[in-house]
Image 1 (cartoon, rainbow, N blue to C red):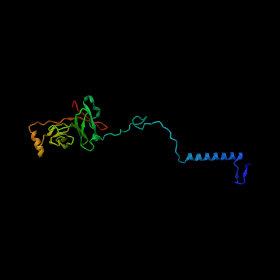
Image 2 (cartoon, rainbow, N blue to C red):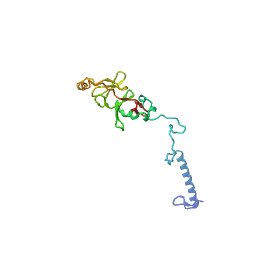
Image 3 (cartoon, rainbow, N blue to C red):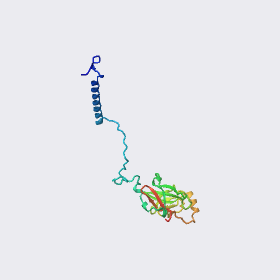
Image 4 (cartoon, rainbow, N blue to C red):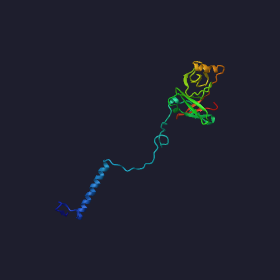
Length: 214
C-alpha cells in the first residue's frame, strides 16, 4: 500500500512502489506525447543526404530530351552551323546578342582584321569594316533599301553597297556640300565593290562568317 504524506496530501515518492508507479506513468505520457508529435505536429526533420538525380532532359535516365535553353529566335536562323568548318575558312564572329538593339556590330579577329555584322529582318550579313572609296568605317552605317534587297550606305561619302553581293549601287553621290567635294575626288575612279561574306548562325546565337575561300 502506498505511503501517504499527510502534510502534502499526496503519495510519498520516496516509497519504492510509488516511485516505480510514477516512472511508469511518466514513460506512458512521454510515449503518448511522442506519438501525437509524429502524427501531426509540425517539426524540423533531420537533414538527409540524397543522391544527385538528373532532371528530365539530356543525361536523365529514361528522360525525354528537353528543350535546349537559350535558343536563338527563329528569325535569326539561316545557314546551318553544321556547315561551319574552320579548315574551310569559317571564323567565329560574335553572337546575335552583340547587336544590343542596333543593326550593326563591329568585330576584330585575333589577326587584327576588322569586319562589320549587320542584321536586317532577322538575317545577318557580314562585310569588310571600311568603305572602298575613302576607307571610312561602316560600324555606324545606315541600312537602306537597295534594288534587290538591303543595302548599306557609308556615312561619309554616301556610297551604297548591296549587302548580299557587295556590289556598288551608288558611288560617291554628290548630294550635299561635303559629298560634292568627296565625289569630285573620285569622279574618275572606277567603283570598287565591298567585300561581303557568307554567314551562318548557330542555334545558340553564335555567328560565323566564311572569311577565306569565299
